[in-house]
Amino acid sequence: MAVLTVEHVQAQYPGAEQPVLQDVSFQLGSEQLMVALGASGSGKTTLLNLIAGFTHPQAGNIKLDGESIVAPSRDRGVVFQDDVLLPWQNVEDNIAFGLELAGIDKKTRQMRAHELLKLVNLDGFGQRHIWELSGGQRQRVGLARALASDPKILLMDEPFGALDAFIREQMQCLLLDVWKSTAKPTFLITHDIEEAVFLATDLIILAPNPGRIVERLTLDFAKRYANGESARSIKSDPKFIEMCEHVLSRVFIQNHQEQSHSSQQTSAQGQKV
Image 1: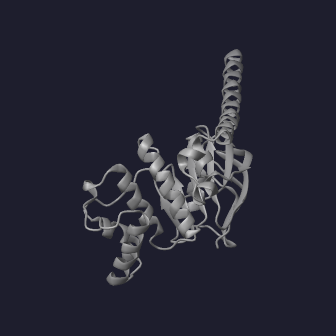
Image 2: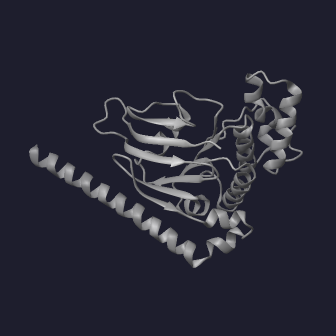
Image 3: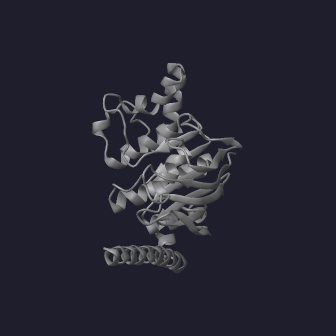
């Protein structure tokens, strides 16, 4: 299976005084689900965009199976926070849209779409219009579309952020079911601590300004769900709650330090004036 390698990556926007990411390194391999978590300004979205090939680092390298990532590719399926589905096409055609662009014949596209509809528990929804779907169902279609080209790795940009708590947990469980079925390496970013701890086999905590990894945790809650334990049982486990508190404290400390640093800078500038 695919191996993603991020090596000493630095990213900086034009005109910015400091990098948005600095010296970020990690590896993501077979059957891992990595979640990146951090406060605003920690570079989560920038990191995902770099892996997707939408932007390029100023230093360092990002490789998939030993080949440097220089542009978007079918090797990397992306699920966006906004589903960005095509409203003039039905569900089946939305899922198969990338395959159509790649020149895949209609029969093969339809067969692949039907397989994926079953995988995301939308069997029989192929001819529905997009506007007939709920928010959770639309995200299921987005997930199926990202998987249609059988990518080496799946990238997810806060995919459940707009959903209510009940649907959000359903989608978390669906993602783990899909991850178990496909064994695809998955990289997901979120600002939700409970979601991060529940989904991640590997959790990286980012500090802001510049974004950098301050801790990497190996967790077993996702594997416990994949092995048959219920989400409610896991999330009520004292070990799960304790881990959420640990992660919260790490994020809070980093955010507090950043606010203190910003206040000191503002005070110093005021004294100079």
